[in-house]
Length: 328
Image 1 (spheres, rainbow, N blue to C red):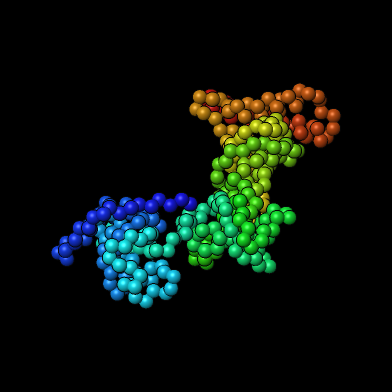
Image 2: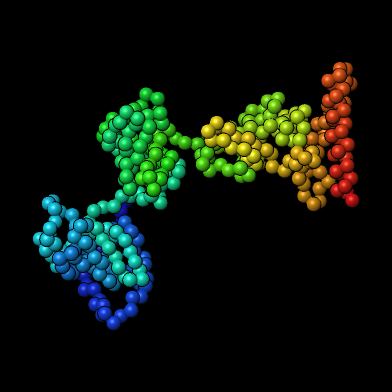
């Protein structure tokens, strides 16, 4: 992560009197934690030093935040008035016009930056354990890549720089960062919830339903029964490579199971949603045509075929009743 270093102007800071009320300063409010500056030491005391970083008010660096080759016990031995030093913003309080500094470069990533799925490049392996590798991601602490989340045959060594790792866990309370070297799916299980509406591509059609790729680790499944009748041929409505809008009706990350339903299907009424000017929605019309085509293809010859034919007739009458109700 590149650093933007700002140089302080060669002017003395405006003095503040004790009579002044603390007022939020736009210049101070623009200063952000981890931002880098080149500042000038203006005063030194026993606890640290005041530094002008060019925002109209002096910032302060505590003795514990001063970097030197040996432990610092006396500020005056390390810093003197007029010294130019590289500093980083540790914290900011615009209301009290207080800016705390450090000479130690802060990590490029904070806990708030570690979103699930975040890709991090050029991470360095710092330690190997029996369960995985600890990796320096330039964050609040090292992350762990378990061996089972590494590509087969690609176990790194200490000192190796990994092209990419992805965040799969970031728990600030437990101070734990989980990583993987295998690129995760675009839609992780943590971001899938019951009732969500997703876009997907039909990949396979089988007798009991259709598989849809929504970007998750595994394909979701649309059951034929979601259309309101177990004898429906889902192939009458969907084709492979077709883009569909689906609704999540069940998600089980443990079993890697994702059940879906086509948006607009009301299984209780054997109907599909339609606009106010439509008698039947396009899918409902296709459903009706498919059932009519089955009845006309061949006469029933067996008990099973006669039963299916009766079910088709019931469904057709239901659709006709719905059509009549809408016309009214």
